[in-house]
Image (cartoon, rainbow over all chains, first blue to last red; front, side, top):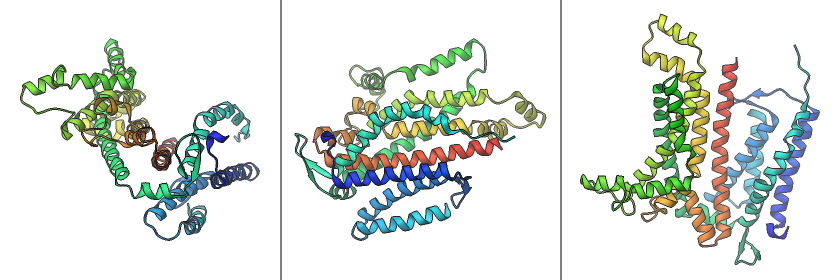
Length: 90
Length: 290
């Protein structure tokens, strides 16, 4: 694995993503759901909302960094708020 | 009638998943690892945090390349989609000429990217190329290695030549699937040619057109070989699109860290746009299914 040049932060990052995927797969199997229509006007399931959250968070982090809003760790707080909003309204 | 739900078919996807993990996911993870480190070769890395992302977001070079890329993709979509639809509308519907047209249309699609680049590189040369020589003979100042406008025109015309067929073939398939009854009804109502197109053909083609737009957007957004062969990104940086710039940075300068940060942002943009297209496509299908 040395050729992949692993670091602890990136390993943690992927571990979080992987565990999120596993949790959502288990959730989808244990508690099947019907898609619902939110503010975007498209049908979404939990998995879709997770995808929108992760992709949006990536852009949120980049914008946070690019516009130098505040120290980067605070971007994660903004992402949490964003995630809550996505899961509530989308 | 209620169908029973059985999700076991997902296991059939496993081999693909393994293959994609090997060819895409693991390399992508490595890129993520590179993007937070610096290296001077020998596979020795130093932690650099989010500095490369900071640098890249502030880099005029990246924003310029992104700007050129967006302009390029918009121009070729604006030309290829209407042109492809127009060609499809005018293709024979059946018989010998229909097959003949189909074969003719698919020829450019079969030519490898670098060969297309080479063809146009020579075609456009003022000394030995037919196009370049002719333009020069009728007094048009055309030189794609020096002129900004000539370089862009060449790259765009080349892409239109290479890929309009794809749009045309998809649109043609969409047109073929429209039942005759629709046209008969339109005839009874004395609908104009435009009305037939606007209210029958276009809505029925929407699904395949979205696929065509998605494919053309992704391909053009990742274009590398053709402009690289023809103009090499020049004159100056005039046709240095995102992937050309990325390769220069990663392989030419061996700046793995910045290039990794760059390519992750590139990837995110493509992912976001593809998701939007995909969502629109799926929702169109659902609306039609109702």
